[in-house]
Image (cartoon, rainbow, N blue to C red; front, top):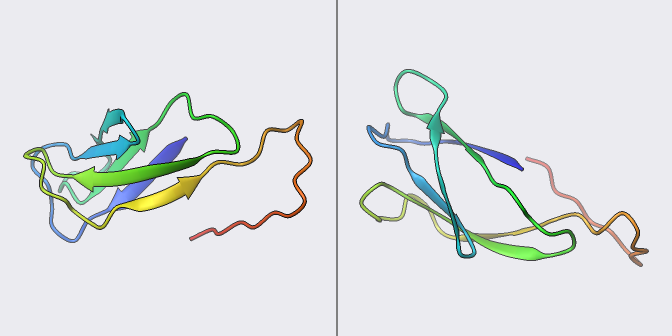
Length: 85
């Protein structure tokens, strides 16, 4: 999954995205350090993950949030909700 963020304050060093126990270093996508992307691998279907974004020194850049993956394609969920921002 590719997660992109835009930050109020430019970052000189790559921010760190933690997805449960996985750590992903950001890749800058502009020349000012305001836009970053994170490619998160090996997410399991039908699971909720805790995400947190921190600067290179470990200070939080925003509040942690939850993210749920789509159900497995062979499952038959009784309901489904999606939010796109």
